[in-house]
Amino acid sequence: MSATPDIEVGTTLKQQDEPTIDSYTDVTDVYEDELNDEDQENMVGVYLSSSNHVLGDALLFRGSLRSISVEPRDIVRKALLLNASATILLHNHPGGDPEPTKADIETTETAHEALDMFEFRLLDHVIISPHGCTSMQQDGTLP
Figure 1: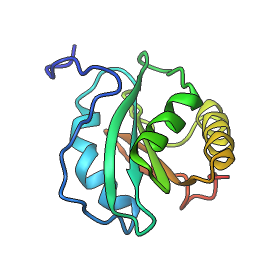
Figure 2 (figure 1 turned 180 degrees about the vertical axis):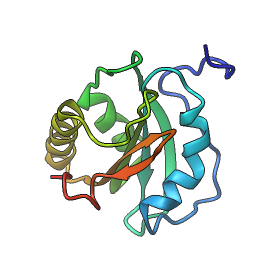
Figure 3 (figure 1 turned 135 degrees about the vertical axis):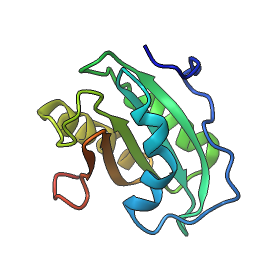
């Protein structure tokens, strides 16, 4: 079991002074330790302005050790509430392999389609594990 307290889905994880996200490592620097402490998959959305300033974030979904059920409407809802221009998704693989699974790629495609309907950009989907991080934008699997 994780030593961290349970976090309510939909709550803000980090209070930030509008940092700018220039690369996926900017995001992993903030969330890697927190997500690696979890023993189940969690998905976080980081919501950005048109100039890539962080407007807010939220723990969007909690899953099991090897899977997570994602509702695209919840990703879009938070973007609408924050009046964001773009989103970066992050989730952890507690099992250790940072490579995206087929389910991760399908989830990313579905999220991309939902966000695109409202003219939000999906900048990246980053997978964090104890054995490293993978940026789906950098490895070419982001739609």
